[in-house]
Image 1 (cartoon, helix red, strand yellow):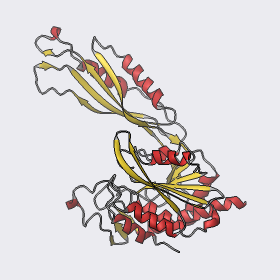
Image 2 (tube, rainbow, N blue to C red; image 1 turned 45 degrees about the vertical axis):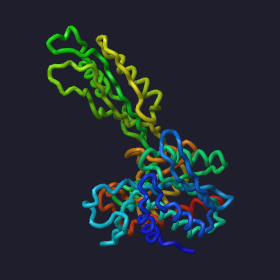
Image 3 (cartoon, rainbow, N blue to C red; image 1 turned 60 degrees about the vertical axis):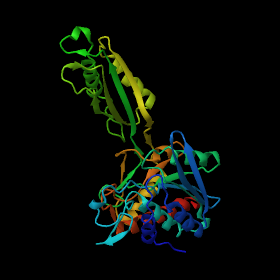
Length: 384
C-alpha cells in the first residue's frame, strides 16, 4: 500500500485542529496508520492546571532497532481571516504550493513520515509515532506525558526524529541537534506609596527596580559553547500601574526571559538571578523574585552515526549535507531528549503561523524521500 503525502496533508489541513481540539486529525491518522500495519493507542491526558488533550501512540514491528517519530497535529488559530486569500482550513494548491493552516507547522512533517512508513517493510524494525495535539499552547498534557507513558510501558527507542520545520532556506539545509532552554522570571520591588512633594514619607521602588534591570540586562551570562551561542537575557516589560504624575508608586514589576545554552540549568540560572538582585542596594524596599511558568531545559543530542546517517539521507535527496543547528525557540524535542537522542528534521518554515501559510509541494515530496531513505539506512544498520 502506498500513501500520497500531498493527499494526506490536504486531508489533515481540512481538520481545524486548533489547540486543543483534534477535530478529527488524530482519527484520520489512526485510520491511515492501521491500514499499514500499526497498532494505535489513543491517550487522553488532563490535569496539572491545563485542559485535557488527546494524543496518539502508534507502533509497528517487534524487533530490530527502534525509531521514534514525534510531531503534533494542533495548529495556531488562523487569526484575521480577511488576511487569508482563501479559507485557512480548505487546502488550496496554486503555483506549486499547498496553502492552509498547519501546512508548514507541522502537518506536513506528519504526512511525510506516515507516507514514508508505507514504503518500509514491516519486518525492517520497530517504528513508533508519538503525536500530540498540544504543542502550540500549554504543552502540559501532550508530548511530555506521552513520552513518560511510553517509558512506563516499555516503549523505548534508539533514535528519535521530530518533524518540526528545521530547514532555513532550502529543504535539508539544516537540522536541529539541540535547542536552547527558556527561563522566565518576574521581579517585584515594593516600597511605600506617597506624595512626590513629601518623598521622605515614602520609599520609591523605581530606582531600585531600575538598578535591578541594569544588573540583569548588562551582565553577560556566558560566551557560548561549541554548538550554542551565548545565553541571552531580555527584559520584556516594566510595569508600575501609576497613571498619576504626583504620586510615588508603591511597587513596580519587571519581567524577563533568558534563552540559555547547555552551560546552565534552571536551578543555576535562578541562583545567578538571585545573585544579581543581591548586588543591588534595596534602600529599604522589598525585592521579590519569582520564576514564571515551568522553565524549558536546553538539550544537545550527541553527534552520532545516526545523525551521520540522517545527513547521508538528506544528501541523497538534496545533493548537500545539512548544517547542524541549535537556533530558534523551544520545541517538544526537549521532552523527548530526556529519554534518548533526538533530532529535528522538517521543511522550510518561514510562512508558519502567518496568513496564507504554505509549503512547496516539491519539498513535501523531498521530505518524504528523506524520511524513507533514512529509515532504509537506519534499519539496515542491523545487518552490518
